Image 1 (tube, rainbow, N blue to C red):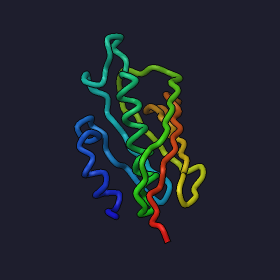
Image 2 (image 1 turned 90 degrees about the vertical axis):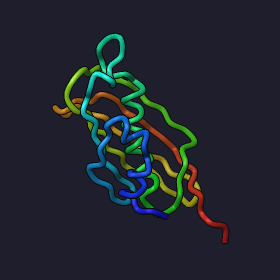
Image 3 (image 1 turned 180 degrees about the vertical axis):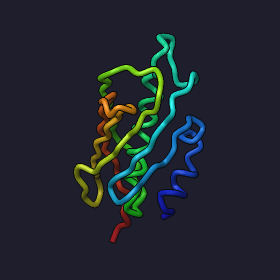
Length: 130
C-alpha cells in the first residue's frame, strides 16, 4: 500500500480542486482549500459539493492511513454556515476501527475556526483473508 503522500498525489480530482494536504497520521488527516471563484455557486458562496469534496478528501486520507485499502460505503454532511472567501480546513479523525469497517468524523472550519460543516463517513476495509 502506498503512503498517504503518494495516495494524495494520485488524487487528481482533489488537487484540481485546489486541495492541499497539511498533515496525515494513522486515523487522522488535515487538508485545506483556498476559496476561488470556481468554488462558488450562484449565491456567491462556496458550493456544497466543493465543501463535500474537501471533507471527503480528508476522510479518504484518514481511512487509508493504516496501510489497508479502504473504500467509502456511506457518507453524510451537514452544513452549518456559508462562506465566500478565505481558506477552508477539513480535519478527519477516526471514531471507530475494526478489521472490516471504520468510521470517521470530519470537521470543516474556516480561517477563524468557525464550524462550516460536519461530515461523517464509514469505509469498508479490504483486509486480506487468513
